[in-house]
Image: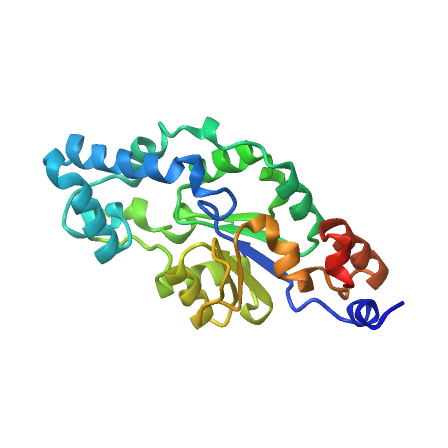
Length: 263
């Protein structure tokens, strides 16, 4: 056995939990879901809030830049928008058929024995539909979503009573860490947003930027697609305390091309 394989067999993975963003991370932007969401938000601004069609797109962009989302911005500005109604309008008519089952991703996720958690700003219904379409809903231990990080919003009697909490806010990161009982030092956080990755980094999470081939100062790792995870971060599959080294190496072998393990 060569020295590369020996070192892998006697190493322990630095991660005991993998935290995954959903949209544009577990499925690519080419599905058109992101573009459809933007169109639906524009329609919401026109149909539900009375803005002119010529204003909608620029207003959506401004609300996102200033408040993190259109919903957060509208409520902060005093619009009495119910979050469930908003999500039903914006996500309820998305072309989910454009998200195709991904057996390669499913196999990769099932080879990871650490806890796997979804952390998304989207509502729970959207997360479940997207995960079901991908064929990976049963691969995750927990979903941290809009409802998780905004537990007090239904109690609000005024639009600005409880500000909407979303990544990359420190409050969203704190809630996720607390709810999932994460040890940031041993948690890997994957997201396609540099701002979200920077927020995770500030809380001590190890970070991986998805959709990029080069690392940034905010990211410990970078990978063009989540399906490249085994090549980009093979240490996920290193031996752990609860399983034998031989077992973990077998799992890594199934996820990595042979030449990538001990080249």
